[in-house]
Length: 307
Image 1 (cartoon, helix red, strand yellow):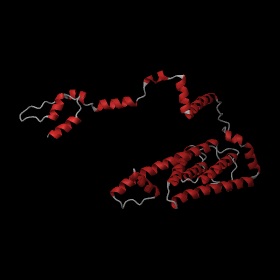
Image 2 (spheres, helix red, strand yellow):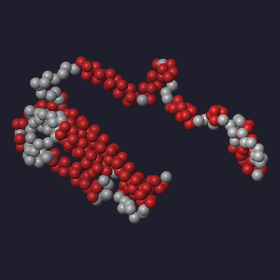
Image 3 (cartoon, one colour):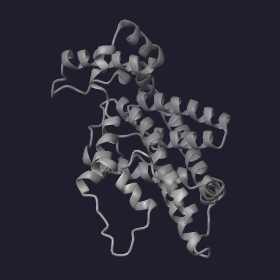
Image 4 (cartoon, one colour):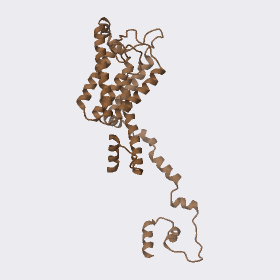
């Protein structure tokens, strides 16, 4: 009993109410009335959940007096530590001025595309040489076949579904957006039966599936440390974008959005696989026969087990 009392005395702080300490340290006698401390006094001894939440919320909030610490030296320090954010701030101000002063394109005029202006001479060459246009279109179709082959190879042979899932996400979103807003085909469009999709069929302008698929394959190559293949695909992707602008197969905004879509859907596919593999790992712990693991699942299980 003395050992228990000494342990309790070490645990309970000395700042607690003496009556609370005495209730823990001494055993009440038979027939003795045990005094209960009211709840309003207990709030002063133990912080309530609402008080604790308020304290944590107050710690997370930024200090309103932060402006008082601003100075030239402080701003210079922020620029040195965050140069990219400073550059983007300047770009925000610049493009706000451009947006509010740029003349709008009239409704009876063709769209203004800077990529089309830079490739006017290329477009004239393709229009004057149909065979050259078909040859370049066939090379572009071959590059699309290379993308598709690599993505399916990573799934069927290497057992890595991330690139395939990213492509499925991407083409689904492209189909929804392309069906929602159908942009007019440029007047200078130079079509070819050898271009993908083969056969002079209709296609969605927004956004470029050629560029997005190339970006997904390139990101997967970098993930597997196949850097030379990735740089080769990036170079071919640039040539592909120039050719699509020259043939008027896509607007500039289609190509830029396709580049961003490749990054976005690769990240979403990674998050999707991470969630699925974690769930599968929990189910496998309950029933080991349940999980027939793929490569990513085994890697996730190994990382969870090691941590």
